[in-house]
Image (cartoon, rainbow, N blue to C red; front, side):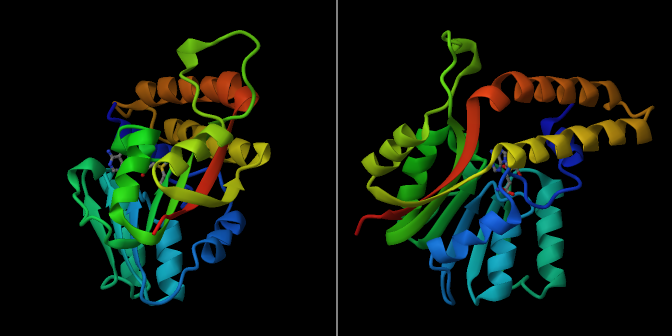
Length: 243
Ligand SMILES: C[S@@+](CC[C@H](N)C(=O)[O-])C[C@H]1O[C@@H](n2cnc3c(N)ncnc32)[C@H](O)[C@@H]1O
């Protein structure tokens, strides 16, 4: 099945499409010094909870890049309902097809979508070029917390937090704050996925994607239990570009 359709089902019940809670995400207001007049670029914005909330509170402009039409439509509709349609723009399609004016955004965010720009390191490179000198980068991703007792190359494990900070700093930005999902936060996030797909499958027994959705959900669930739960975490890194 098309992975966009799968994720539209798995994330149909949630607006924040990453493991961090709304309460923790509110810390970004201070860490990013969000205020009137700023411009924000959100890569893989999904339903754009963070950017929509900022636009409700501040007179800022935002652009969201999103490949899944279901998520972009949701974000657009919610923004219109709140009278934010003239300040928030959602660009449908792959993020790497978008060419930002170099150094043109005050804040560049990528929460859970670095793969859209080719992986963590290329994403940092792309984001640093898009943000103005002195502007803010917000990148949330999976991090390694516990090394496996025996090497597990098949798991393609990510960097740990110190190495992640090293990557960001080598690209000319200083990390000033971290926001991490707790084990319970991560468990809640993946449980929402599992619950939503199982419920959708019960509601749609004859759907052509029924079996494929269940197969994908089971694989994701086992990946969480076998790799994410024992070894990985999820952290947002907030950094200021030099200059
Ligand atoms: C884990 S979700 C995070 C969504 C949102 N940033 C949040 O934290 O709530 C990843 C998002 O990236 C989007 N995505 C995946 N590949 C993409 C691509 N090549 N270009 C743009 N968006 C992409 C997905 O559709 C999804 O909305």
